[in-house]
Image (cartoon, rainbow, N blue to C red; front, top):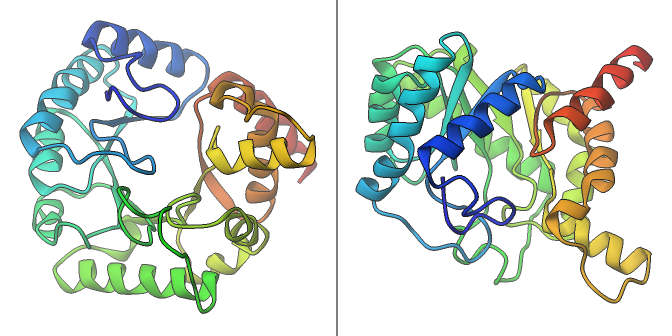
Length: 262
């Protein structure tokens, strides 16, 4: 529900179009519909709580009324946005940075026993890819982040079983670091929590394709499906159980066969 997201920004700003898109996603096999009102692409601009609420709440309401059994995830780290979304029928929270950007989010979640997916970021969307990106040990550092965020939530009343984790591919990482995370994804299983992964159409895939295939132009987001599925395969084989994707039907078909081969 944004004008500036890297792949589908501006396509579903009207609630009617957003609901139609949600219906298509559900018919194609999506288990969760994730709705966000603030782009987190590199260099994106901050959006006020009021604007974010204005963008997502009508859509959550309409999707919940039309599809009472679907899991609706609100993609927000802001306590006020999440509070309104849960009241309107959201049944899951997808929070960039966990509680690091808005500590009040914990108190909102205490009142509603819903799953919380926290995804890692180094820096902020506005600058995360503009500075030198250094980790001591990328997987170890991200695991430390998860442990701190989960401990914070538990100390204030949340339950460990509410949490799922996402290492945040592309959020303050280089191309090489993204690949290392995927290759070592199984190391996150030691936390004992569901692992989510989101690689769909991301810019590092365009960079890999351009460099390896000697392309004159960086492939557009919608031209990165095959590359997305390659990384998805590695992620799922290494323990990912939730896959975020723009291309639901293609990914669903891909995963059905991959699951048969595991």
